[in-house]
Image 1 (cartoon, helix red, strand yellow):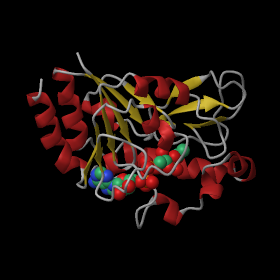
Image 2 (image 1 turned 60 degrees about the horizontal axis):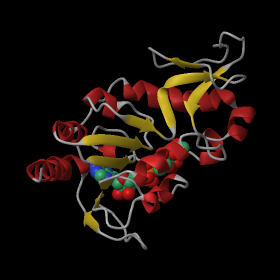
Image 3 (image 1 turned 60 degrees about the vertical axis):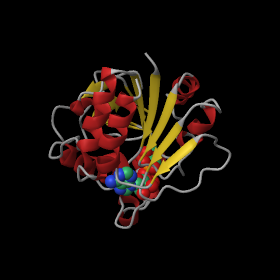
Image 4 (image 1 turned 45 degrees about the horizontal axis):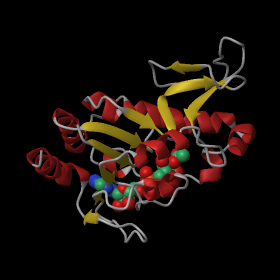
Length: 229
Ligand code: OAD
């Protein structure tokens, strides 16, 4: 089976009703990054940080995967599909995709502040000050904050090298190191980029740009890819 590697960003979940980060009215327009998504913010005002992610988590319990997520699941009928997502939602999993790597963490998981190996699944939306891990330390969101290392980046880079077809969906490609992953994909491999505001990616060959929404473009594109096999 040919392997398709798909890098997704916030635009993938936009049609499910989750705000992107940088579009007008995006999440970072309403919140300063330093205030909510950094170790400094956590040290200064953990309550505010918890509240920001609690609201995101609460919303996640209210939204559903969209036509784009569902289309990517259909690809598994004929391809070995590996999704690498910058999203912290679980909409790929809920749609039914079987291999999903989360680069920036997962909203429904929390972890210990003394032992990063202690990760727990939350079955409700609210994480509070005073909620502790089994070693007695405060739990924090299982999210990669600005200024923190991205533990899964090397695994993701290795996956890029093995792609037989590469797809990028709904990302502004401005946040590194994720934005650099496309450069690990071999030159001759076909690359597809779905984003209504896709910009020119320099130094990348064999790139087809589809300036449409994920929920509209992906069902058609997936149909095409399934017909090719
Ligand atoms: P951005 O908000 O930067 O970019 C979202 C992209 O989605 C834009 O290029 C939009 O044009 C596109 N878009 C909007 N609606 C779409 C739709 N219906 N279909 C397809 N594309 C659509 O989000 P990311 O690139 O994901 O990191 O941001 C990367 C990282 O920055 C995030 O993972 C997050 C943030 O800071 C962390 O929280 C660590």
